[in-house]
Structure formats: structure tokens, C-alpha cells
Length: 397
Image 1: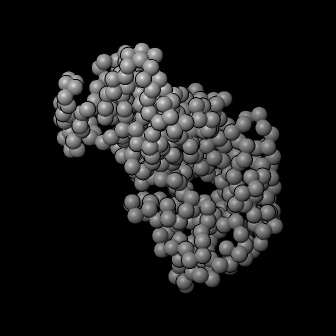
Image 2: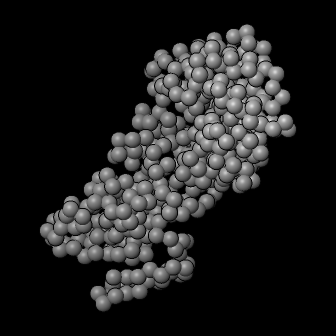
Image 3: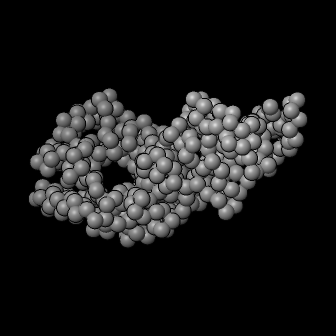
């Protein structure tokens, strides 16, 4: 067994006499960490700006920037000229303000009773999709409080959007308010990730129809419909401002039909873990929980300091690959809460203290979020959002 000490870590050898390399200049002493490439985020943002063709671009940084760091990403994109930012909750908006973000911030999932004055205090906009919320907001605000709102109508998503009649009623209720200003109308696309689905054009038509209502036309509004799929595939959905999300983080909204690289997007995340032990295994000796893997030959098994407690799914056992020593190596046995086994038999250069790449590329080998999404029968969004809080985030680029 070899022990890794914190700080400027170095490895110690036990009685088996494994030869090891002192590693005082290692990049990180962590057991597992993410490297978030902010220059790749900027590249993908510029791609969104290019495709938006003059519409304002408000990056979506909810769920802590899809798990990658909302403040760090927003700060970098603010320097690139982002017009505003979208979050899901009031708490996420406050976190951006506390992190120094000064651009407009809109809360897309609305607010709860008791949060009305927080919107004003932290200069947050919000989506409104209930007349009762509009009335509660106006009554809860103090005389000198000011809040901007976007009325969200349902054009086919059937989620957090009001029917057209209620949307008109909200506009009329706020007509003479000096505390609440209606800034625009929004809706959300349900099927834009399928380019052959006619529902998106129907939603665009319904949205335009609502914007032509006499009460709506009487306001000077800035309206928004497009998410990443809308930005990339449906120019008729762009309107005044767009809300790109997954495309900023290196994922294609059209996965698996169109991959991120084919769409001109760059990968943003590299996820690494360190080898904490090398386990010699004789043939036919079963390994780990449930004895889910049995080597057929004398083997070397590297145990990585990462597991499903970090968001590396248990379902990846005996299925996934990681990159180490410039090669794609198989994950074997069941992924544990804190540890994952990899067969490194043919790669003697992999030792205690070596790093393996769970997501990203090294030399000519790679594992991308789309590969993991296919293995787990999910979408790229979930891969990065599920990476846990105890995985350190480091920013490059």
C-alpha cells in the first residue's frame, strides 16, 4: 500500500516494495478534481452570439453554472459582454450578486412568499407566471422598492407558464404600478432539440400571436423564447434576447443526432482522479462488491479516489473507460461511493499518485460527456450537473 499525504504530497512505499515517484510539484493534491476551461466557455458563448444574429445573449448559469461554478463563469462572460444572466432561484441570483456580478440577473423559476423584497434588495428580475404572484409582489414591496418582471406564457411546454388570458390580466394588473415594471414576455420551447418536430414552429407562431394582442402591443417589451436548441437550430425563435445553456458548457442540445464538436462547440470540463492504490490480482480472484469482476489473467488494478459519492455513476462499473498513460482503460467491478477500479495491467507506468482522466482528453485519447451520456442513457446536462460538491473545481484558460 502507498499513502498519499496532503499538501505537497509525496508517496510512501509499504512492505511490498512498489517503486514510486516523489511528486512534490504535482498540479493538485486532491483525490479528484475538475478543470473548467473558461476559454472554452468563452468560445461557446461567442458561438451563441454569432448564431443569435443580433439578439441579446443572456447565459443560463442556474444550478451553479450546471455544476461548474456560476460566479466564475458569469464573471468571465460578463467581461466578454454578456447582456445578463439567467438563474433558477432567488438564492442563485443572490449568490451571483455576492460574487460581484453586476449585469442584469433574472430568476426564471419565480419566487416564494417572503422573497419579494429580496428581489428588490439584490436587484433581481423575475419571471411571473401567476396573477396571484403579481398581486402579492406589488403588495409586499416597499414604496422605494423596484423589481423588473417578465411575464411567462405557456405556448406548449405546459410548465411554469400562464394561459394567454392570465398573461394579459397580469399586464393589466401591473399597468400603473410604480414598483413593478414589466420588461418583456417569455416562453419556453418544449421540442426544439428535435429539428424534425413541427411543434417548435407552432410554439413560435403561438408566441407571436400573443405578442400581437392589443394589450401586449401597447407595451415596449423585450421578449425571449430561445434556449440552446432554439439558438442553434431555430432562428425564428430568437426574438429580442436568447437564453443559451448547455451549449456554453460544451454539450449539444441535439445529442445524439448532432455532437458538440460537429456544432462547433468546445469541451469545457476535464475530470481527473488520482490513483490511491495498485492492487495485484491473480487470475480468477474476484474483485470488490458483489465480486462483479474476475480477471482472467494476472492483473494490476488501480483504485482511483473517486466514486458515486462524487457523482461518478455506479452504473458505469464494467462499462466506462478512463484515460491514463495516454490510453483508454476499462473501469472494472462496481463503482464504490469513494473508489473506482481500473484495469491497468498493460500500463506499468500507471502508479500510485498517477492521475486518470474520467472526462476529457489526454494525449490522443479521450472520454467526452456524450460518451458517458450514451452509457447512462441520459443527456449531457445530467453528466456535469451530477458531479458532486466535494470534487474541487479549478479554473484554467
